Image 1: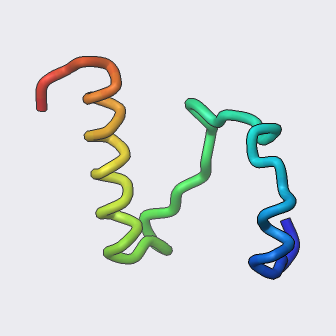
Image 2: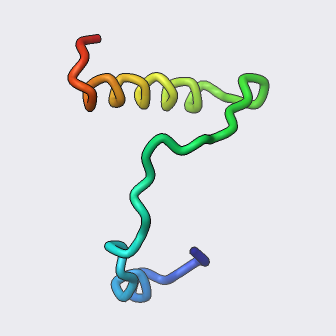
Length: 55
């Protein structure tokens, strides 16, 4: 999506966007910062909760 103004964003139908699940995303430990590591941990915890597993 290109840079849209807030007023233009109200006209976008986000319901037509695909729902992402189990996407293959390349991750590089060498390029990761602390925010990337935290995000990766949070994503793993969310996946466990979604599957009904205990942490």
